[in-house]
Length: 213
Image (tube, rainbow, N blue to C red; front, side, top):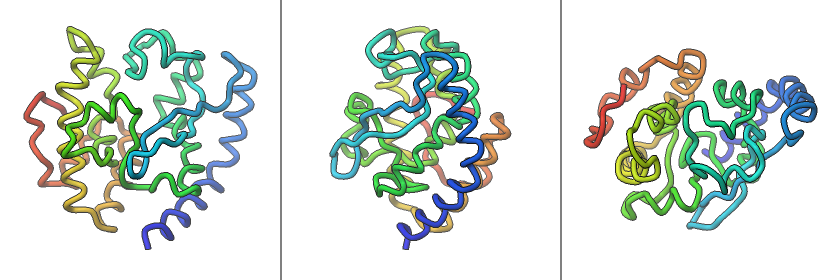
């Protein structure tokens, strides 16, 4: 049933987004490093790797320089048009292809890079759900404000709490919860400062490690 809903939603989104997607592709081909798509290896079902599709927003080989797979606020590796795509989350839209391929669900586990996957406590290592994406919608700023090594902050603070959120989703997942996550995601895209998740999800785990809005 969920797979059927994924295909229906992905098809509708694809058709609605197609005109904007063509414009984005043309802009990317004419600006920055003229790269359109970025294929990033992520950990998928049963711990197997697959390639996640995104619009290119950063310089080539960015994953091998600087803070690597951790992006900071005003990160110099992010290209000018890439900043717009990342701010609006439009860089994520090519993941519709991954949904069609059965590698992603519209709502459900968010696949991580191998190094971030290994930071999640093993008992929670299922992958991260859409709720974490809503709560950590401005993760770049959160990490940038930390006075220390961003990798340590991610490993010791962010990763454990994301694991707790994954555990919560696994215990409460339903079509109704997925619908609320979709609505909340749309709201925070247009209203980034919104804390709508506090209204939608009353019994989320306490962060225990740091304060989030």
